[in-house]
Length: 76
Image 1 (tube, rainbow, N blue to C red):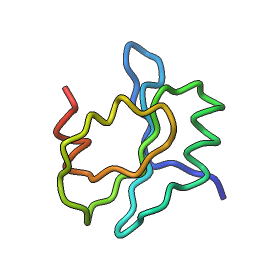
Image 2 (tube, helix red, strand yellow; image 1 turned 180 degrees about the horizontal axis):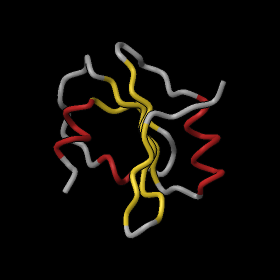
Image 3 (tube, rainbow, N blue to C red; image 1 turned 90 degrees about the horizontal axis):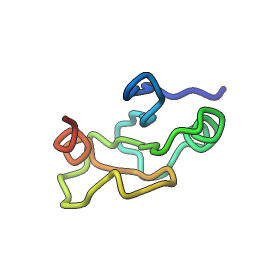
């Protein structure tokens, strides 16, 4: 029952995890589980229905809900 939607690698190592949800305001427990298992620095519950907010997503070290527009605007 544990799953994440994406694992993004940077230089061959897990950089961040993504759980994608429509209308979710709570973090999936699976994100914290896999973040620990993979020693991944970041984990995001991406909400597609939330508006952009001005925040640096990559300052968070614990799983957090972020708007999709916010996270995608910060990817290289």
